[in-house]
Image 1 (cartoon, rainbow, N blue to C red):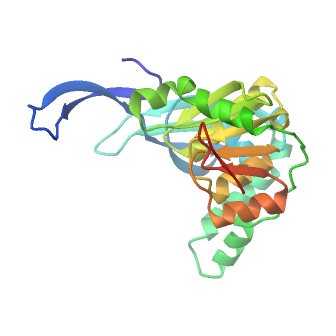
Image 2: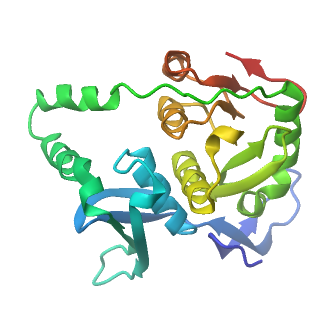
Image 3: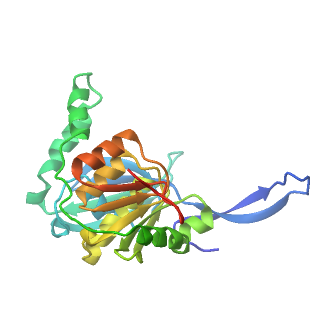
Length: 266
């Protein structure tokens, strides 16, 4: 089976009923270190699935608030770095942003360098993590039936997830619950960044629909939704206390434990 973002591997299947093991080939989700370099500055190394990396680059820069619009994103170039002399390989993702618009980049890079130098620097880091965000300005009425419809249909759109059973999905849905776009990744944050980038590349306003995530609803995912001006977020798994607090503080309508027949409004 050839699936983008997966690699076939030989495995041995064992059975609880004592049947003889069998040898087969099964797709495994790709997971690799992706080094993100922005305007020549090493910014982060993320563990991610090396697919849809142009979407990922744009969504990551928007979520990190290095830029405020897709117009400030110039290009990205992704290439695989093979293992050399016992060193692990991975991927390099070189991103170019409009220089005047990339003001936060150097400050953020300096902060990252300072984070490990002393305990006091951790105070600055906490302030960065809990930085105030512009509240969600979008107002959208989404019927519960639309969310149930989207959750029920999501599995049909998870190509990588169905093949590997190891990938998260982020889906953008219109107000009626029709799935418009899906991105997948081994990491839930990466999948959401890829979706945000894909929407921006497609000129689709996140305020016109809602997002469903196959993930636990964490603080970081709520932050990404708020920054993207997503009005409604539904997650398959439960939400954390901090995620709920941030959603309430920033005007994000939040649902969790979303199933085909029930969900929690928090």
